[in-house]
Amino acid sequence: MKKKLTFLGIETSCDETAAAVIRENQAGTADILANVVSSQTKEHEKFGGVVPELAARAHVENIDFIIHKAIKKSKVSLNEIDGVAATAGPGLIVCLGVGLSIGKTIAGILKKPFIAVNHLEGHALSPGLENKLNFPYLLLLISGGHSQYLIVHDVDNYKQLGTTIDDALGEAFDKTAKMLNLSYPGGKVIELYAKKGNKKIFKLPQPIINRAGCNLSFAGLKTAVLRETKKVKMNSNFKYNLAASFQDTIIQILSKKTKIAMEKFTYETGKQNSNFVVAGGVAANAAIKKELILVSKKMKFIPLFPKLEFCGDNAAMIAWAGIKRFKKNLINDLEFKAKSRWPLDLNAPFMKGPGLKI
Image (cartoon, rainbow, N blue to C red; front, side, top):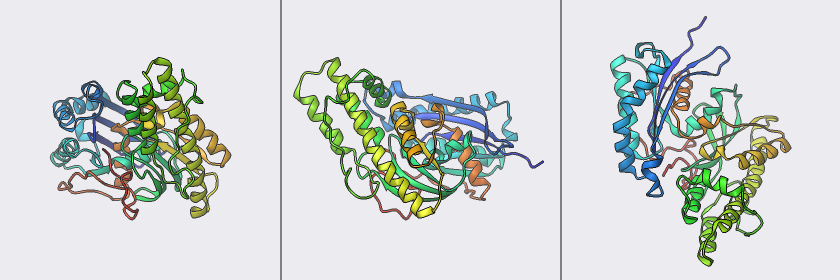
């Protein structure tokens, strides 16, 4: 029987310090031996967003402990690890350097293969931790720093169909929460408030909704929310209703643009009944998930969402991407440098959205 690979994954691209040990199983998915995440939400909450220098300092303070904890929990010794994968971009350079450096150091000392992982590819392949994925599939990446539609032809082979031309969706959630004087991060609290509100109270714009293609835009929506907050003194009902209207507007935008992306995918690949993968932090939103499942069924796609623990930043997806890249002999040397911008489709035109995590 062919030996199944066991990898250590390390993630420090933004404000989560994470380490994981995973092993490929006979089904072609992953056994999660350990997946440890230390969040810095409390440290950054008072600033309403991530402060890079504070995040980097916290990574330095926590990374050794987190890796040790993951190794201990996995009951796998470092010598039994077949390779080390660490996020090398996109992300905050001062943060990326912490995990990347220790990953290269561990690989160098143990004389194990080192894989520099694109954080976005980690998200893109994350449903494969628990599901057998067939290429090609359609991917919607929606998180704090990226919002884009891609055809995933294979590992390391992506074609961008559409992207945000300004703000990422997760950023729009965070900024809307801040304008409503709600807590950071904004995704969970906006979803909670939206459940208590009337989505029909506010008529908010859907930027570039009638423009051809499946590019996205959220800056105008964010500005419209700001204008509404300036009109009246905010109370709880106002916040509930504006949160509900904001979230519903997002759902309408994603519903229409996803249908366009699905049509483009089918036209370009000729494939029917393909997977539609939704990944990234915003994929945890239950209302968005419900609508995209309905769209998938209507368009004859098979929807796949990672478990909640794999939607946000985590090291299990990095280790998994490392295994997948290793099997294609995509191994990196120990001189590999961190990248703040690293799009999955290198041939796509530059916009703020693809491959830039801020």
